[in-house]
Length: 251
Image 1 (cartoon, rainbow, N blue to C red):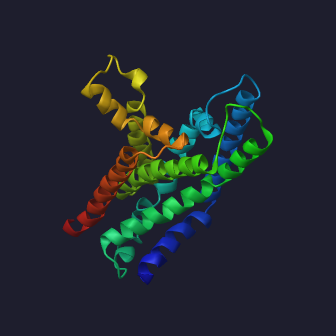
Image 2: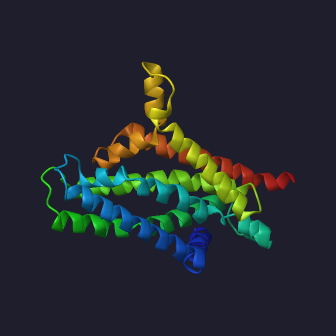
Image 3: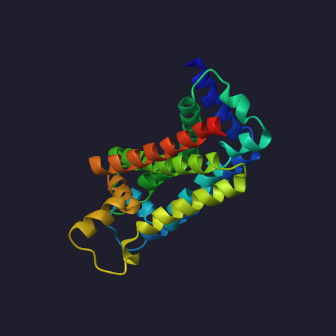
């Protein structure tokens, strides 16, 4: 257990001891600032009937942060280890391959979560100083939104870990992760479907839509289907990462 915790601290430290980690945090702060101004413009205009958290979720900045930062966070998890020649040394640690994968994923997820914490301050400022009758927000809604952000981020980070485990190049890992994430995002947009989905087709597109599930969290609604969706896909990509790391034994 001590070795596992040490690996998590090692992965988390690699983000805070590198320039890349602070560039990611600065980028998130910049985009959150843009979204803050966008929300202010909407709240100071006509009355709205949506929670502030849902207004933030529908801004393009949320998806830009998610799509662009998660590949950069995870591109170095395994690719840098392979490129620098420390991968084999890492794999001799007194933990199994799955523990290494989970430690790197958890370390990246903790860093991702910390980078999003300023959003809570923005929400409190909006709730305190901006008065719009329809834009209600309570602690449960904020908590639900943040849980949704962590869950969807975990899915994208798991995809990034898998991409990083496949190559020695950080750029290729980031590109593959971005491509897979963008594909899932585009599949979430029902408006791009060239036919009107009904019956099981509508249910299918609703189920795979990340935006539909995230919207529930932004409204303060906890759905078992949303939790299952994110957790199952995250587990699936972590399983693929584990197998990709384990495959070195047959090379």
